Length: 218
Image 1 (cartoon, rainbow, N blue to C red):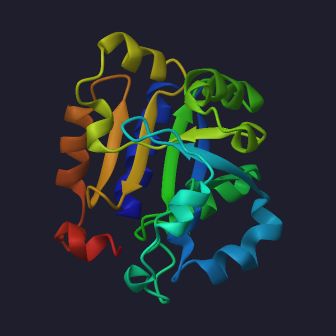
Image 2: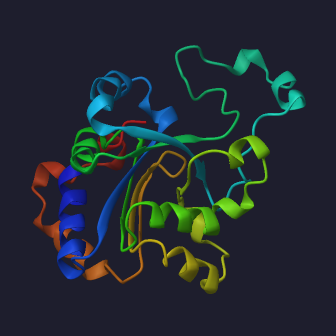
Image 3: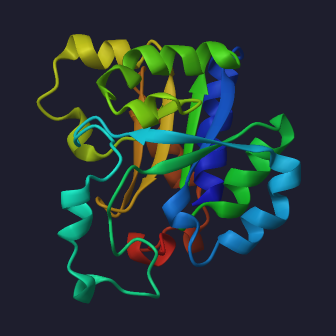
């Protein structure tokens, strides 16, 4: 999986050399396999916390008293940090330039990694994301968070006007994200990458072409 993503990113950056790498980590998927590695590398990677906005899901918000009181504690698995599924999805931006590549290469395959290639640099990208995706966030507490990062699933692109999707692609050219709901890696691109993806898959070693549930362990 890592080799395929690396090849696709390399191809995209050769076509458009100005594209900048951004890596967003989904906090809840650091558990249980990645948390120790993430903590060990945090001083070098310089993670900054933000909030995920998933276009096909309700806007993130802090749980209300009624939502908390309505939790069925019998449904909570103490060994699974994601079993409660309550509250906003928190994320981390990897701020260190060298750490971005190291992060996705060492952490892919557990549902936590989201990779973007964008022409926008630094805070220009995050300001644009706040305009495009952060506008749906009305919770006052979350509005104070440093950034809002879009995370996509298959449903994110269904029944959405082309004009809105085009606006999304004003902020990035390529997205590669692990999605647990779809049990898949979501690839979204401003340009048609079908020929490139087909050629990359053909060129992968046989041992890399395995059933998805063997590659993605969530």
